Image (cartoon, one colour):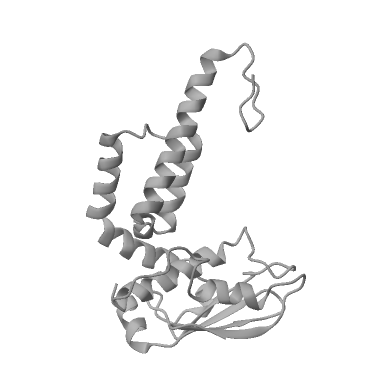
Length: 203
């Protein structure tokens, strides 16, 4: 009568098979993305579109669909990467960019990045934006970025600094950034490499 999530299918067997099929397809797609690490080719825009598709109506996880999706991501990887760089920097508050609206300066400011409990603000998605920024620097430096925003780089360092029930002001430093957390939840991030900043601006 019930699946493990508690959904009741009593008298609705015609709905049970499509439901199970969708759950299976969703699981296969997530597994494929994880083992191939092709999610690393996705910027935030691509990730959100992919997650919406999986949540609403996951495509059938057959060889043809999987092959077509992976081929598209590989073929479009350069465009997706450049779009991700453009999107993440253009979304920043204009007051904290340089006077040239198409260039970044020496730092970025992420307002309200953390909530009152010292954890990432789910609604501002600052951790995702920061991970996209850092991933751009890794790639431009010819290095492999962390597998996820919680497995390496600046995001887990900030999470460790602010662990607890209140925001703790302080600074952390990674290969590419120096970040300062303020008690109002704002996050200031300075870029350590002028050369990489220049290459981001060229993109």
